[in-house]
Length: 212
Image (cartoon, rainbow, N blue to C red; front, top):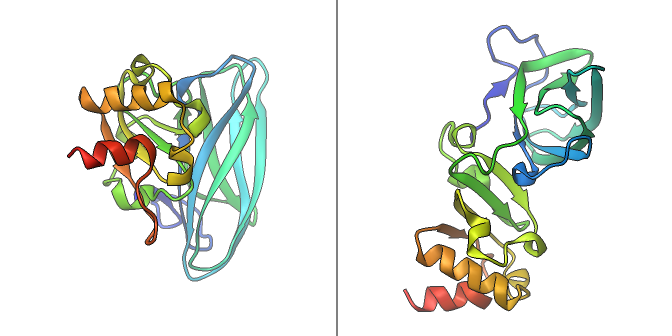
């Protein structure tokens, strides 16, 4: 799991063991002044940890957005933190007991369509199993919904990987969405599928796998 900031980071204040990593959400599609979000992956060590995820936007007016969290010992959780800003970048930090855990992490909000984006869809994906050390930091990341998947292959332009789970939802994709996904994969797009032990591929993914 690529978790870069931790209580053991040089210069960080002493705090309960916690590893964390924040990445931009929304796939680079945002409106100035509208709602944006970050995805924060957190993993606790031998102790439960309670604290706050803090997003700071520095503009004409400095704004701070705080999301409380509580993680049991030896647990991994994902938090989605929504906020509003007119800026293209924000700073993310973690506080626990009035102390900062790890370093402040800058986040650039417009990311996916710069190059080689990684898009995650479904609740059963495991980013920690597929992401190399520093991979998310090098790849633009977006968390998407099945209903938002493109109905034209052009919608996948500059996306590098699509990571998918929840085959029951794949079967609900429209004909145009399924065709766009197939064309994108057939022309070089990378698709990774996560299946539960009793789950089988469905929809366009089943069709593509049957042809390989």
